[in-house]
Length: 152
Image (cartoon, rainbow, N blue to C red):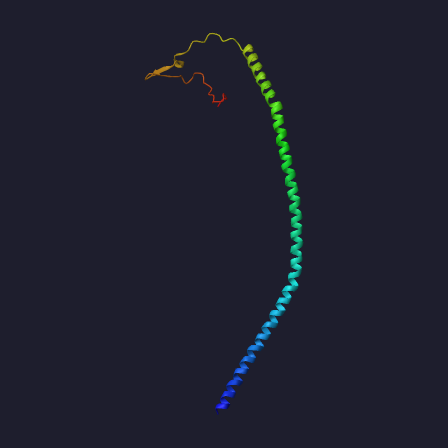
């Protein structure tokens, strides 16, 4: 009886191990197929990625060459503007100042001579309030000038 019990136990154990081995073999077969499919698809993708990286490197080399040319043009333009400003800037300012002075001199020369002031009416006089002089509202307006001498 004990021998039969041991034999049945061993038969169940061997059947269980056989099922596990069959499942494991199926899993390994599916895994092998999956790896083969991934390899088939990965090789062309890697080739495309390699070509893209080479193309990007070529484009970056072109952009680098363009950037260095732009930097050279910028430095040349800066040098040119500095040269033009130093060559023409000073004389142009002097010519403009001379022209302004001539216009001012001609303007003063052609301006009418100031005559005697007309008599002021009672309302245009200044009034003194608490020790301060308040100008009349009808009097001449003063032009304000900022610190650079320009009208506000």
